[in-house]
Length: 198
Image (cartoon, rainbow, N blue to C red; front, side, top):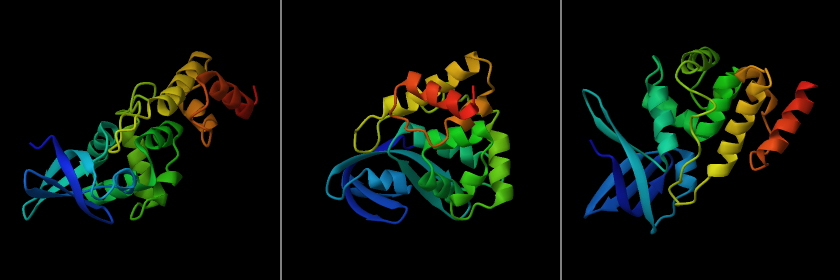
């Protein structure tokens, strides 16, 4: 199993990044989010997943562990192939995916190309049991090496705080939809309480 590829990014195109390492160019299928964090000619690290089919071996690469983990969760769902998973993760960050699942917001998933209403509902339903909103996807380093720990961490803490106040995870996630995730946890909680009307 290839855990990661580190080298110079030599070529990109929609949903594809080629990283040259040790004289070999690794073509990695990837998301728009990862592509936005890498630069041709610069060093890149992609965390990989090797997808094996009868007729092909495909390497998928992601700028962070969170995105890779979200990809693996998505393809574990019946009817969600690698192409659909990439499409979802190009439209939503792993943290946004968690909030959609927690809030039962399948509509946001339909923004991804090739994802219809029925598939989106199935994804939300099946991931509810697999994702812990207060613990999952804390925001790790992207391919650019820039960490994003606070924004997603604050959102998770705010959801945990709202749950402690007696709200369900779905209510908390719904109340935080569209909130600026760079705000401190206390501010996020205040905004959510205002939205809920408490």
